[in-house]
Amino acid sequence: MLADGHIPEGDLCRSRTDADVGATLADVLARELTGYVVFEPQGSILLGDDERAVVTFEAGVPVLAYHPGSDAGGAAALDALTGELFHAELYELPASALAAAHRVDEFRVAPTAPARRLAGDDALVERTRAAAPDERVSEEDAPSAVEAFLADTEGIEAIREEARAEARSRAAEWGLTGQLDDSEEGH
Amino acid sequence: MVEAFAVASGKGGTGKTTSTLALGMALAERYDVTVIDADTGMANLLFHTGLDDADVTLHDLLLAERDVPVSAAVYDRFGMSVVPCGTSLTAFESADPGLLRDVVAELAADTDVLLLDSPAALGSKSAVLPIVLADRIVVVLQPTVPSLSDGLKVQEYARSYGTETAGVLFNRARPDEDVDAVADQAARYFGGTTLASVPESDAVRAARRAGEPLLAHAPGDPAADAFHEAAAALDVRAGDAAGVADRFRSAVVPDRP
Image (cartoon, rainbow over all chains, first blue to last red; front, top):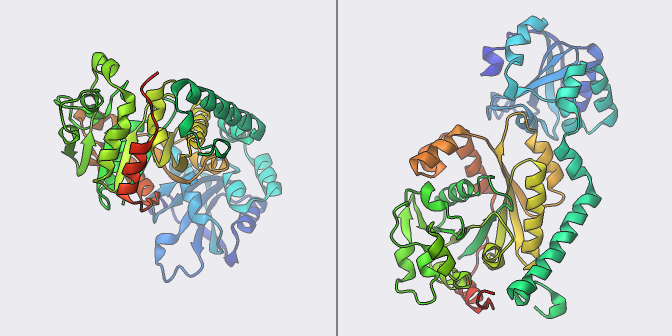
């Protein structure tokens, strides 16, 4: 377990119930916390410890996420934190105590990923990006070519229209017109 | 009950055959599953199932005057019925893709789930037939621009023939790729559900070398877990086997151009 094995226990500096993830991330950023937050879904005492998730921070900026219950790390671990209220405990640690865990690449998340995916708060995303070290913003957080491609709705609609037209003309070529799902042709 | 899925990708290298067999094995825990290598021009399934030396293959069933029953090309492997395709170019050239519908119709009568491993191309009649014949498609994608673009094309082709998307499967995801974010964005354009994100795994290549499906070779691998998740997320619709068979038979697919 990453949380037990590689991250030593820190000093509890805040514990809140009914915490939403966005407010907690904002709090961590304002405090410039170096350490970690344990998120436990409300009511998970009945569910056991498996539902807890851990997010670590350097100077208030998220570094990695881990969900011991599913052994999921990185972006996948963030899924465990979607859309609920949590009991959140903030722990402080020296950066050196986190260094080993922070080298586990597959558990790392983009600095703004938790705010973007869990809080949906653009202002918080911007504040987190501004606080993140340059190399983390440029390496991990620039919109990827894939994201840019998928954000271009007009470009995608053009691809789809072209494919539809091509499918129709080829169907004619191959004698498959009768198979087309086309109400105009009385299919 | 029967539903026929074409497992399609548009682009090669997405791990379509691996995905077809992995979904097939996972679904075989709940259903009677038949997997057909419908990629008649670039057969691949036989190498993944230890059927390299299969005497009778789909090619033999696609001959105008075939002398073997469909059942001769059906092999019980890994809990599924597997219909491999041969690799001979001559056999491919003499095969009539239009006959695929008869073969599929016959197989559909006797199984719950049919998976058609479809060609990674849209440029010929034999390449599009699986998506014409299937009830729905499963699109195998990688989180890259070319793969997404080709996946969208396959989906539009399929929709043109009334074949909707049952789900998309993100395959061969590298640890540095935020597939969940890509999948969220892509969900706006693709039908069905996001079935799973399957991590890139060395076990896939090892399984291929061993001539076994991933789920048989490395059942505990994270990629195998993800395929199980995908199969669980796929809502197989109850259909009437006879109805499906009739539909395939009545499909007006004339002789090849």
